[in-house]
Length: 329
Image (tube, rainbow, N blue to C red):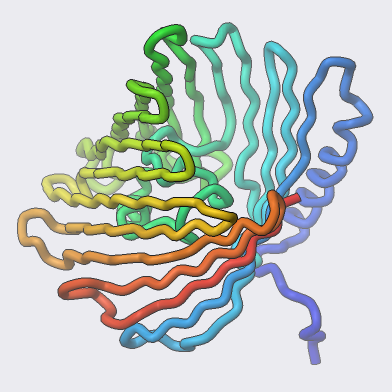
């Protein structure tokens, strides 16, 4: 009878095990080979969640989840550097990020490898810095069609007009398969563009778009959107609207607004979100409200509690409770 005392990684094959061992050894060797003046960062975090789900048709209603386990190593010099991040989210071992970059100037930084595509404010926000526990309906809907997320490719990013009106841009070309393969399986590629402008102190506006050829028909499909982020004192508010093709000729739309206010280590927060998967027929539209509170006990330890409920004709009526403990190191 197999020993049930230890978790099993469903994709922990011999090649993956060797890759993990080599990666851990590389991370451990960084301080040894670093030269004077080099910057090295090694860290990570763990997300443990408890789910209490009373929505229609959900089973089991209670569950503990090892949601995320991340280990990241960064190495940088004035001109070049790199980053490697390993994840074991829900016991699925994966290399999340693996890229290098060359800094020609603050306006021209070249990236090569696997990293997040420059599309969607919520997707580009690291999981350990999200206001709510999980990303929302809009992110999931567009993620199902492979618009945001990680992929292998080349990108150029930089900051312009830094004195009066800071403008940050990002342009990239990627395989378009969310980095699931070590190399692409077709000639179609995905392009992504993002532009952010700090118009006032604490207020940042963003625009982004992405395009690729549909793998089935070869026709162009694209997505685009805008976002804002405003921080003032202990309060923050941000939102995003995304639109795009689910299939050639179809159109989907989603957006959210969320806000939080931190006082004495507690941060009450909420998110209101609406998605329209099919704009022509308005079929499957959903509205969801999330109310939560974050407790910042320490820089390395944080507790979050969220209650989610669908409004109107929800896909799964009822209430879902989600609790998370975050430990950073």
